[in-house]
Image 1 (cartoon, rainbow, N blue to C red):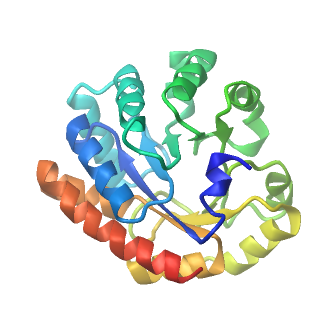
Image 2 (cartoon, rainbow, N blue to C red; image 1 turned 180 degrees about the vertical axis):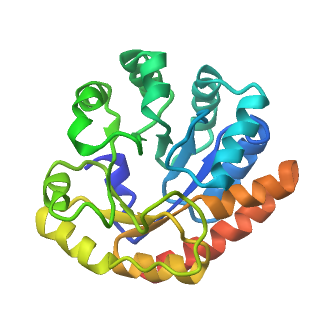
Image 3 (cartoon, one colour; image 1 turned 180 degrees about the horizontal axis):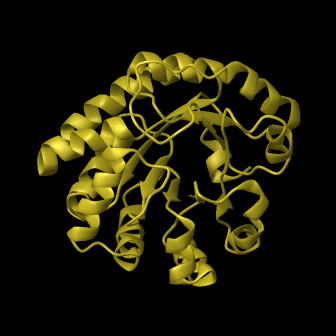
Length: 259
């Protein structure tokens, strides 16, 4: 069983996201440590990109702040390697195909593996194009995470059969961001996944409260939260870690109770 899949073994998994380097890597480190202390089971580390097409304004602005502060992919690899010494939960990188291509796909996967990263999410790479990355990911023990959306329809079966780590169930069409209601039929999407694979699935995009996190986890194997966390960092800067920890505790408690 992979490290990622194992995180779902005993209960539903809570998976927070944070943009690396917003406002600086020291704040990111402090936030990650608070996340772990407060119940995070897996952590998605965002590598900033200048044109993050799947992101709403909150994460897009975080990417811009991080890039302006001078963060680079190399700095994030070094940062992750050091952080790995303090943190046991699995790490995933979330970024875009262009970041990986421009760095060099093989060089990127090798560095990610050496930094102790277990998986990679590339929201702009559709199932049909994943071959450009997956073979090299496999070579370095980095699981390429598949995403399904409410528009995936019949492709869900196909995607599920080849999925690794966990499946990222996108709750809404459009970009990331907090939403008051999640209207997609998550239950039907998850049912299709479960008919075709034992790989767990977690719901993300738009979860903004512990209640939503708990209800999405009840329908699936876990919940992913990004914009609500990144928004605290934007508002609080270096003072964000404790508030991030408090939000993660409320969210993870709700997710674990849904187990």
